[in-house]
Length: 406
Image (tube, rainbow, N blue to C red; front, side, top):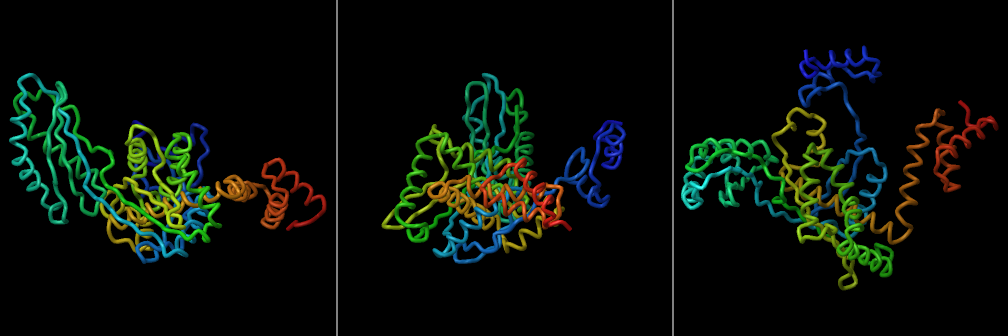
């Protein structure tokens, strides 16, 4: 049997026989994971952290974040705390729908004008074939066609209702492909696939008193760094990484397609032909104003959500009911993460706080008792020395003094 035809337990047994050392996995958990993916052999656990309170549109949210990076959780919480003190985040959405493309190879006999006359009929027929989507408030919003040399593009804009909608869009495109396979001049269907181009947007805005960020000098420095991110691609991409620290952690916690969002954000950052920061911070009327708009195709139903209780737990804990609400929570986390990073750069620098958190992880890996680890951590932080060799030397020193031994 081929590897993918084996059960998860059989795959693990095969790897073990080959000398691979695998961590134990609960059989029930393993069986559940096998329903979600391919060639399953185990699981990878991420810590689930929390922003206990982030005020968005006047409402407090608990926002779970899935990441192994302690500084991401700390930064998002610090940003959220500052935002809350200023009244929270204001959000809005522009949910145009998802774009799908049916790409056709055509011959000289193909007439684009003739195809365009058929689009109203095709739209009606397709919506009638997907009545369940219509019943939930979705369906095809627009159907268009264009031609580039010997390739025709039939593009569909689909309202996916409360689902992310990728599978539904692809099903609609398959239906359209069958309808057009015998259209005059169509020689071959090249592709029928969702486009991850930005089309669903969420925006967040916050207005902070200057005193809340350490005064006018710090605020102006932060705004200047933001402007540099609009001018310099190297700063812009690093600024965007700071945004995505929080965004990706939220996407993972809520069971969303973070790969699709990352791809769309990359395209959005380059929409002017020059790669730029996705956020903008300015000092206006003695206040620091931050704004962020992200392409966020999100959903609260469909996909793997029904079979992932931990994701359902997180959505329920946040109190999120709609895909739009979810997108606005996620973009707010992105703005909070971005603010915390820029504020750190404008004051102590990013490395100081980052290394303090990294040191906790380093010390946790020492072969030492909890009391010894805590003692080593305190010495490292006092010395502002963060290396493994230094940690091991301190541990040896403490043990030689017969201290902190359990």
